[in-house]
Image (tube, rainbow, N blue to C red; front, side, top):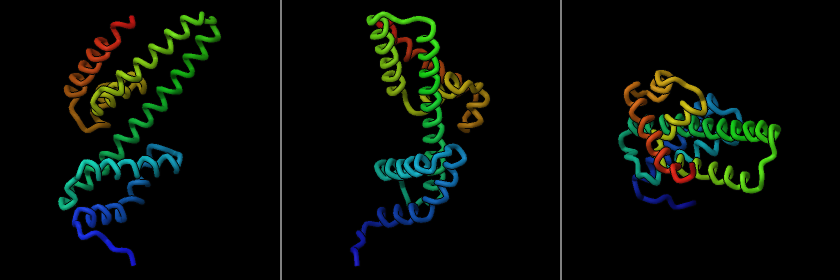
Length: 173
């Protein structure tokens, strides 16, 4: 018989995992179609929740945190996938129009990499707002509804994201 740690945090976490894992997978399935991606996403949310030392005693707050985290992780995943598809499509369109010189190809790759690095440095909420706007084409009102925030917050976060990207990408332009 395995020994269970006496630590109450572990017991609460384990209880949440057992109680909500399948339910959160079903919730994530609304966003993602691939069952393997769904499971990876939900497991990642639980790992991050454990690392952030969520207060598992506050049941309702912890439950809301898990649902919000799954939603945000799914939206980020979708935004990333759409961005990858869009970049691949743009690449194919450009390749069909012209063949870049080796120097141009290196510069394009460096710019793409710099954009990805800059986006990765943005705070999660700001990055999500930017990706939903620029890569998913959502309006500020739609983003506000999806994320449960005000339109003004979306405007402020978007402005901050654009200023940050302009500063970090200026040496490359």
